Every structure is written in C-alpha cells, then in structure tokens.
Length: 269
Image (cartoon, rainbow, N blue to C red; front, side, top):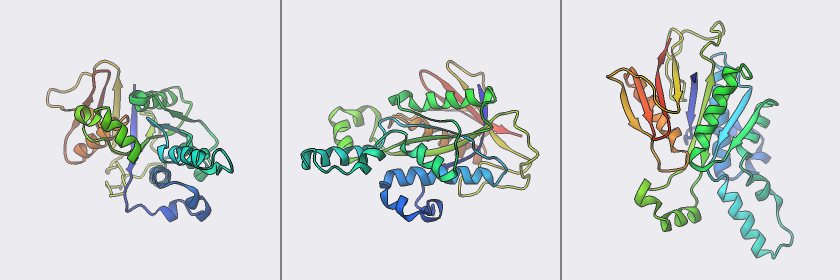
C-alpha cells in the first residue's frame, strides 16, 4: 500500500498554541499533553492547507491514552470518596480526546477514529489511513501518534524493566498529512521549500512517497535501512520522522524495518 506524505509536524515549543487554539476557555481546560497534541495536529493540517491539501479525515494512535487526566480523575475519585467529582478530567481522559478536539477546531465532521492497541496502535492507524485513501473514502488523512509518559507510568515501566530492554520511555507527539498517490496536482504550489514548521515539500511538486508492506519491500541496494525505535508504544512514528529528516539531508530512500513490517520512504515527483 502506498500514499504521499504532504506535510508533517512534531511537537515544538516554538508552536504558537494560543493562535492554534484561540479559545482561552478550551486552552484552560486542556491538560498540557492534550494541548500539545491538539496544537501539533492543527499545525500539520494548517501547513497542508497552505499547499492546497485539505484534511477531511482524522486517524490517531495512542498506546495508553491521556494518562495525566486519567490519573487526575482517579486521584480525585479517592480523595473525595466518590463525592463531587469534577467531570473534566474524566471527559479528557478518553483515548479519542485529541482527535476529537482537532475535529472541533477544524470543524471536521468526517471520519474520525482512534486506535489504542499498545505497540500495534500506529501501524493499525497507518493501515486504516491507507485503506481510506486507496478506496477513495478520503482525500487527505491527518494521521497522528500521541502518547505521554507520566511520573506514575514511568515508575511502573521502570519496575517492569522497560528501560533495560527498550531504553528510557518517552513521549510521542507527531502528525502526518497523507494523500493518495493519484491525487491531482492542480492546486499544489511548485515554489515551496522545506521549512522549519514541518513542510515536506520541495520545488516541482516533490513529496515523500510512503510504501508499506507487512513482509518486505524490494529496495535499491544502496537504500539506507534503520530499525524501528521501540522506546515507546508509538515510537515507530518517531522513526518515520527520522527517516524523513534523512531524506531532507540528501538520502534518496530510507527503509524503516521491524519484525512485522517495513516502510519505504523516498522522494516522489
């Protein structure tokens, strides 16, 4: 299965959260992690609009959901002895909180689904996005990977020996705008360069081609291969970001491999 990555965005302190989420009441209610996820997703969608691509579907992946809000609700539950509970942490602890808030911010009423399958979350979300594009059910999909590590979850993962096997657990917050390989180009600009806000565009309609295979992909002998990072449930998203950065630095193609799948990225004109 194939698609094009039109834009991508990872969380950065340089993102203007206030302009991306202008409603101060919404910003006040969102936890820091949810706020970062929503701002990152909105920035990716806005960057795509600048090159004539308008997102109509949202697919997000999360390993454990919004842990900070979940912990806050459970602590309030114990401290208040089940009395006078604030519903906000419970509402925002649901796994689809970030996807839902992005849809509200962009006023999108189309397909919106969140996958929470631990290590398989992002791959399942990617396959779902690819199916939407291949079956012409969507023109552009906003694919996101969001997971957070709190003090409690980090302590539990440490006790389970996670850091000894996979390394120190880390947050993941990355979004990609995917379009079909056969998408028309008449609305795309041909004078764009790669910029700091995550535009994966070069002059002459250059975009990144993504090829996904559950087994293997035939690649050039000189193709750079990297092993998928496993420092978190969704770290494959970080591996894709690393692969795109390598393309920007001059690599012709990069292959991300795992024991279950492989993903080939290369420039596509």
